[in-house]
Every structure is written in C-alpha cells, then in structure tokens.
Image (cartoon, rainbow, N blue to C red; front, side, top):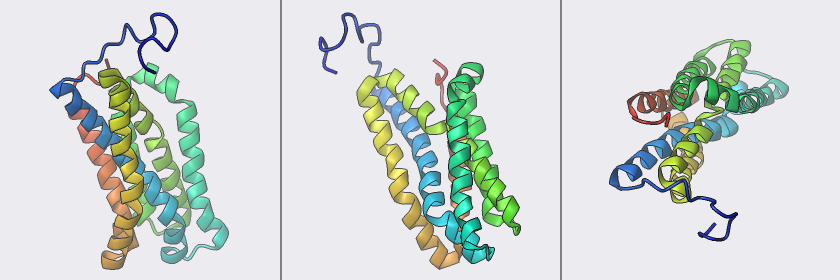
Length: 200
C-alpha cells in the first residue's frame, strides 16, 4: 500500500535496502523461486505421463504421482513456519533443494512405481517452502517491489518447465528430461549456500 494508507506507523520500521547489491540479492532469490516453480510445473504436466509411458502404470496410479507430490507439498507448507523458525531460511532452502534433487532423481530414474511415487512425494516436501522462503527474503531486502521482481522470476519457472521437458523428451527421452528438475533443485541449494545474509 502507498505510504499513509495503512495503519499508523505501518511500514516505517522496514526501510528498503534495495541498492545495487539489494537487487542482486532479489535476483538470486528469484532464481531460487524459479527452480522451485520449474519442478511444480514439470511434475504437474509430465509426472502422470512418465508413470503411464515409462513404467506402464494404470491411469489411477499415473494420476497418483501428482497427488503424492501435491499432498507432500501441502504438508511441508503447513509445517513451514515451524521449520523456518527452527532451522532458518538458509537451511530450509538448502535442505529443500537437496531433498527435491534426491526425490526427483528417484522419480525420474527408478524402475519401480512405488519408488517413483515416493520420489514425487519427496520432491514435494523439498520444494514446499523454497518459493515462500525466497519471497520472504526478497521482501525483507526490497519490500513489495522485491517480492514483485522475485515472484516474476519465480513464476517464469512454471512457464519454462513443461515446454523445456517436452523438448528434451522428444530429443533424449522423458526420463532424462525430468532429471533437469533434480539439476535445478541442486542449483537452488548451491545458490542458497553461497548467498549471504538470507537468515536476516
């Protein structure tokens, strides 16, 4: 809200620190959000087809792949506040990226349907709090404008993920295409390790 439109004193204690370095930090956390959203878009559009085409699962089990991901993600977000208070933003982002990387490797490469479903669920747990934590940090650094920039980068992942994996599926196979989710989750974890001040 513009200054003066909120409750008295609202926003006065949160000055924006978005100088040149501040916007670099916003871009970094926007990239983390992009990696997280890439996974959500990819699994939403390609998870069921992977189970149906590569593992010959029936229609019900194929649909269960995204359901496992979404349910685990919802549970992870319900526990998000507790995790952030307990571990801090950096650890949540790093552990989330590593968890999503391992889960998606299992989901993309395992030959057993049960392991694939567990991999989707593990991926959901991993990405659950990456996007919210990245938005929180962007807001702390640059206020609403920082959230707007970071979320724009983040939601680009929803747009980029499905067509990128579709292109790779045609070129090298769907399994290989889905491993890009693991690669980006690992990139997000590495960015989180290298970023400074994200627990502020």
